[in-house]
Structure formats: structure tokens, C-alpha cells
Image (cartoon, rainbow, N blue to C red; front, side):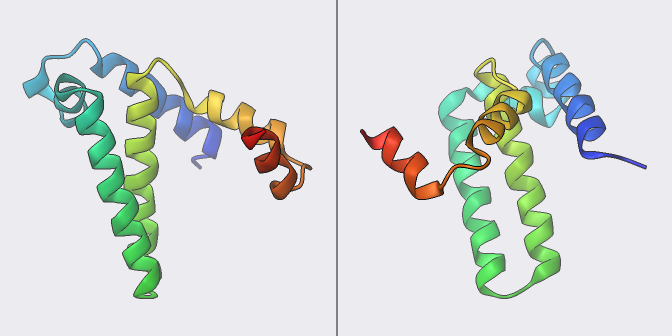
Length: 108
């Protein structure tokens, strides 16, 4: 059985390996070769597609598009030298805080 932590760790390892791969060898390597702006645009496309699946109330498509969104988020994080663990640490920091208070503290 795949657990979230094993899936994230395995995916993170693949994403790191693809950084040194030839652009024509994999989709991820081609994204890295295109750079931050292209990866960010792809992330935006995936976010829109996930939102549209939600609007259409298509749960199957929502899961599919959210998987794409998460995947491309991880690609962008890896491109920037960050990891899923960095995001998990931030979520853990916020856990138990009022979302309104946390946002207000960032805006201060």
C-alpha cells in the first residue's frame, strides 16, 4: 500500500534525478530545461483545470486534475531547491492557528 509519505519521498527522489537528465529524456527534465516561468505557467494551468472540474462537480476529474496540480507544484518546488517537506513543515507550523490570525500575521 502506498502511503502519502512513501509516495512523496519516491516522487521527490525522481524529481531530483530528473534535474540532471537530458531534456528529451523525460517530461520533468523538459520542464526543468524550460525554466521557472514555464513551470509556473503549467502550475497555473493545472490549478485552473482543477477549479473547473470542481465547478462542473466532476469528482473523478477533480481528483485527476488535483493530482496534476500537486505534481506540478512538486516540480516547481524541486526546481527552486525546495521539497514537499518544506510545505509540510509550514502546514505543521500553521496547524492549530486560526487561519484569519495566521494570514493577518503575514500581512503585518
